[in-house]
Length: 255
Image 1 (cartoon, one colour):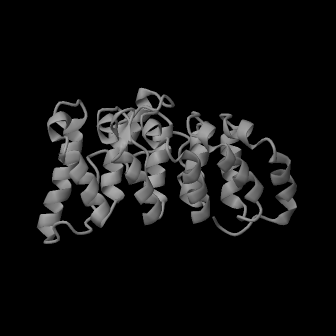
Image 2: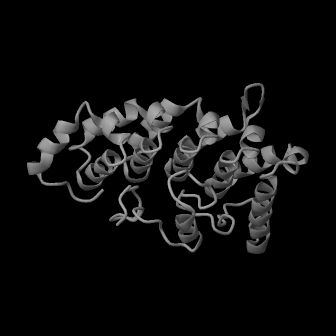
Image 3: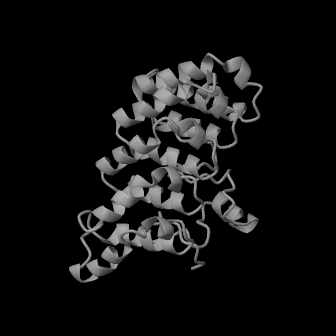
């Protein structure tokens, strides 16, 4: 966030109190909320943030609300990220399998502190519905991208633990439709370790071709854009309306 907005617009922010969730889940209102978060200081929007955090579980599954939560994770303070993680803890595997909520999990991985990231890994390497969570995620159309993001952003022992957990199920992984992407990702990471002479150390490698490291996945159709826009993403061009002042917030308008 930049400098605080003038106090003369505080009445606008105050008027949103009690209406944040309906606005965040509206195709135009979600943009207004993101603008408010972008231009106002933290102290000016604390009540707006509180409403977003309190309703995180609902917003992450909404086609517009998920963008508001992502905006808070990317541009908010560490306390905001920790509070959001507290609300979704225990539901991260289910979120990773959802078209919209999986984007929020990726943002959590990307912008959380190492300690918070460790909490996510605990769920990814545990069990869900009586089976290994890692298997559930790797065979899912959205979950496999969450795992790839985790491989990218985790460091040191956390990354080694995740790779070890995946390798325990390598026979099954090879049978998954999306398994080859996971395997290729690990092989790329490990070849990077050896090339740099830092095998097992903190070596960050890019994702597979076409994968946006900022969290937006050009491989996944979120149901928001047509095939023409998908082609723009594959060429590295943002779809109409996605580029804001900082190029990060969603807009339903074609600009």
